[in-house]
Image (cartoon, rainbow, N blue to C red; front, side, top):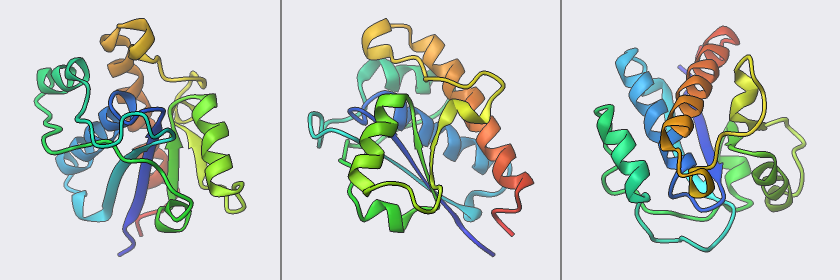
Length: 157
């Protein structure tokens, strides 16, 4: 059975991408499919490397019974393009930086999370908006859409 390898990416890897990582891990676990997925997250920048998930993001996850314990920020590398089947950015700036890091996207692995929903665009950035609830809703909807897309496209068979 194929294991889907997914990397979620945002600017610092302390808010949006770890939220997506742990929401998606929770969803696949609850669906009994954790063994079919390998999910991580990374940053496009080096600013937060080694830092834990931002406390308000961690709190939002905790409110939904999800732990991000042990997660520290890491920077995406060009090697990640080979290591993952899908690399999911949170906004168009992340996508630009992901393409630069990977030297393009010859295999169509780079996507925006909200493109898997009925309202494509950017995931709300709580670093600026301070609205972690809006980010939670975007991430949850995006992860649900992504999981449905993967399952519908037989990516795990």
